[in-house]
Length: 162
Ligand code: THU
Image (tube, rainbow, N blue to C red; front, side, top):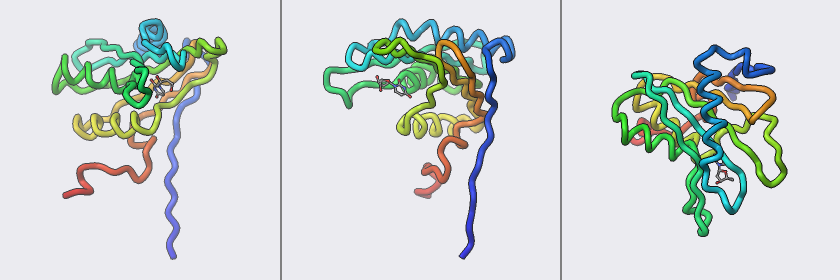
């Protein structure tokens, strides 16, 4: 029997000020747009902001529905907006933040859910270049992850169907 191991490393920064300027701006934007989320059911307001290779910044927020599975996460709203408005332009970095209005907390980074990881992966493979992720609450530590693949070990993709 052979054992395999998959590991990945990511950066943990103690404060937003330790990020490069462009990432700081993107994270601030993600934090700002949490206010535009439509989250009357969970009251968990998520904001995402992406910078594209052409320098444009796109944002997305979670959009809930009375029928809960119909709701969309901020990440997938963002990706659809980017692909619709700037088809074919690669995404460089996505910053994701949130505010939990139920308990007022937002002090640790929250990582994308499973469906969003799979969706992000499709975009990363499609554009053939990594999408960086910058994750943080409204305060506290910041995680920087260099690509989406790292978040989905042994991922399933179109290549598996060829
Ligand atoms: N949510 C996101 O927008 N992104 C994630 O990665 C995790 C969860 C949203 C979905 C739902 O509207 C609310 O947060 C609570 O799950």
